[in-house]
Length: 305
Image 1 (cartoon, rainbow, N blue to C red):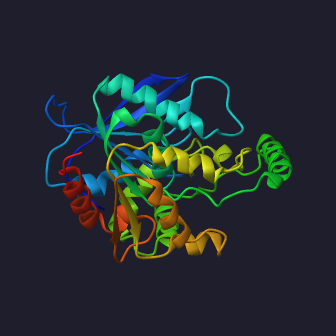
Image 2: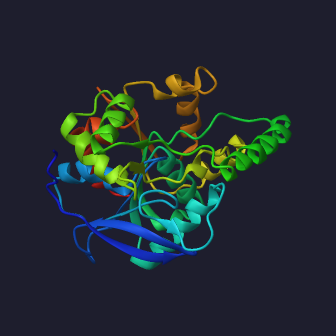
Image 3: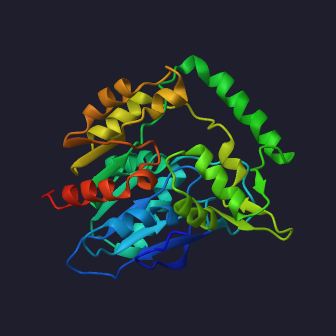
């Protein structure tokens, strides 16, 4: 099994009626900008371990489990769907708690990249550098889709309330590892074995359950407004590094409904933009090529904002 080179520590922080789980590496520094890593959909903060191990410099690194993922759980009643702006408000509260008025370097993957981009446009003064790892956003929508989207959202909520959309459980950690490797054929066995124990945990029956809320599978009630997203991108004052993988994950997911070319056109709205490609990697580039990704991130963060 993979052996972590840099030990992390965990703590829980009360944030907006949640007990937020936060994983950290390194120690607080008054001279080095804190590094905040935010994970993607159905992932966990521990997933950054391979990149953290590949970094050449010591940093104080803060990585939360988003609400309903990993070990972050609601303190009150369960929810049956999630609202995207909540992630931004959670991040805002976490930065208040850990760094106060200090700026941070923010790295986000996939859904976390989308959150990071939106947050950096809404709170531009809080971000020194931003790295977006395939946080593509969503296909552009039209107002005519709204009635059907609301109906779909309500129907899917009923499915969740009836116990539908449950996440699959596995007989053991090896079953989880095999699932991870099936999803990402580039994932090595030792890393899959390690990740399986971060991504899932055994229940009372001895089966391994994914550490994610099934309600995350409910379609958002709100349409993705490209005009709003682009206006937020234009407000980002920090330098941004947009990193894509050599495998075209957008083409695989959306089958022409949303293309890499469209994303690259969108991202041009960011005022201070650099771009990079990680080769021999898919969407989970932080698992596929952590050394190359760490090199790109460190080189970018060393530049003057």
